[in-house]
Image 1 (tube, rainbow, N blue to C red):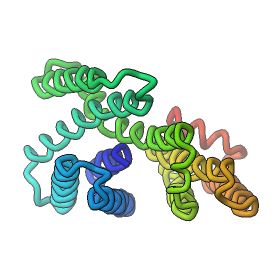
Image 2 (image 1 turned 180 degrees about the vertical axis):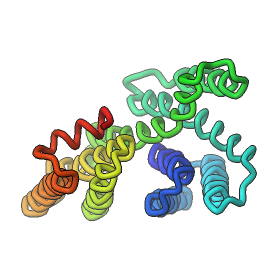
Image 3 (image 1 turned 90 degrees about the vertical axis):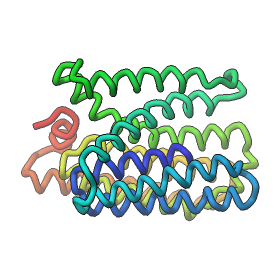
Length: 268
């Protein structure tokens, strides 16, 4: 859930800067829905209160800053500071969350996050002082978007690893929630493909296949859903992806969907 809310906030900033209204709404709903889960965890004493308060502060600040920026009500200096914050925060959180997923198989340590934090701070300072090349500054500017996408991509990995370690936890997963996650992310794939936004396409596809559908597979594996439910979800997902690729091919006048995918990944 932490990787999800951090990913949503970072992608909200990414798309707010691009003025992608529809995706801004999607990312905002993602932040709010996951925040509701954090509130439930805090009420059930499953999340320490200080962690919940810090999470609340970050979520509130992120929503206010992004919407003020979207409506041109935010000073550019404050926006640059927020961009630096999410760049450092995302780059620090990603390796730490990845490491923590495999505890106790790995020693409990904050070293990955601390090293990434120092690297991120150094990169941001050098970029702001003009000590990097133009390509380097552009790379640092794109870090937040990619770390957000990677956080999203790690979310299903963390969930499925938890399922593997503690099969009883699968009972806490809602099959319909996973189905909605699969459908919701799947519905964003055609637009990401059409606009040739590889970052958006990668995040939506990964979440649809590995978070939504991947957990449906886990639920079926542990006999928590019926065979009919699993087959319906499988058929629907692959038919939808096939139709998205076919329609994009038709719209652009290509003879093969591989042409669309090549343009998406490598550019026109």
